[in-house]
Amino acid sequence: MILAIWAYCGAARGQGTAFTYQGLLYDGVKPASGAYDLRFSLYNADTGGAQVGSTQPHSGTLVSNGLFTVSLDFGAVFTGNDEWLQIDARTNGASVFVPLEPRQPLTPMPYALYAEGANAANLSGGVADTKLPSNVALRAGGNIFSGAQAIAGSASLEFGHGDAKQADAGKIGYEESSSDSLDIVGAGLDGTSRKVRMYAEGGVNLNGPLQLNGSTILNNNAGADQIQFQHGRHSHYKAVAVRLCLWTFARGALALA
Image (tube, rainbow, N blue to C red; front, side, top):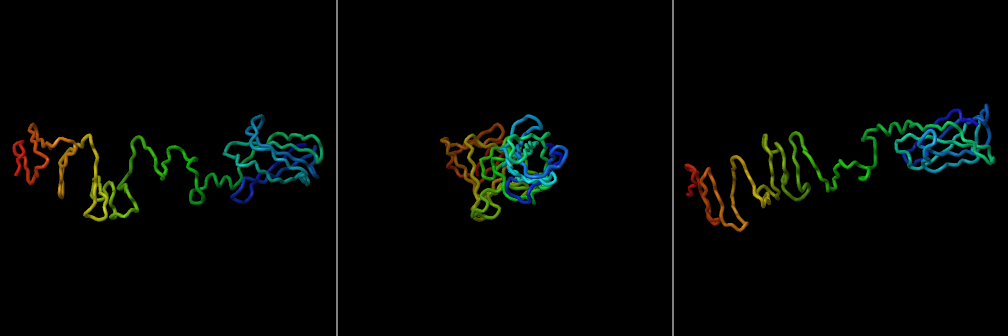
């Protein structure tokens, strides 16, 4: 027996793992006809190798002028690797199967080729988190980013999106409110109650001019009741309870008015 020609195509549906296999079987030098027992096995190499999936027996398969058609289902074993089909045949009721050589390589059908290159707009369903590479950030949180991260152009990061707060509050953005600046907008229900709270037990260093608008309260909860104002080589201490109404620097000294 010689398997002379073959064709491989899949069922026209989007579910299941079964596919249709068509072949041309010769008995000696003539096309075979009648009922034959066929056995199909999948391997990961054209010779030797390891079997993939289970063996598929098809007893009493009708062969007409050499042509036969069977439905095969090895399960979800196709992962993009090359696979070869081993076919054994015997006349119906015979005791010994004859292996048909060589093994037949399984090539992609048209729908499989389409699925491999289809764009996202034509795909449906989701991809399990476990199937994603480790460098893909999940919306559920718990992500740890290392190295430099960049957001290009005018953009913002908003916290508490959808919560009851003033529109655009709770944001850190670049050029969102003013040109060439990093804007921090506190969270609040309206434009008079937005707040930003910073915890920096190790200290905060601000370089450059500092402008404070609105009421400013300096509160020291570290145990020392002194606030230091320093200009050049001169330092001046005042108790925390002192209210600074107006101060100016003159000749490197701090004057209170």
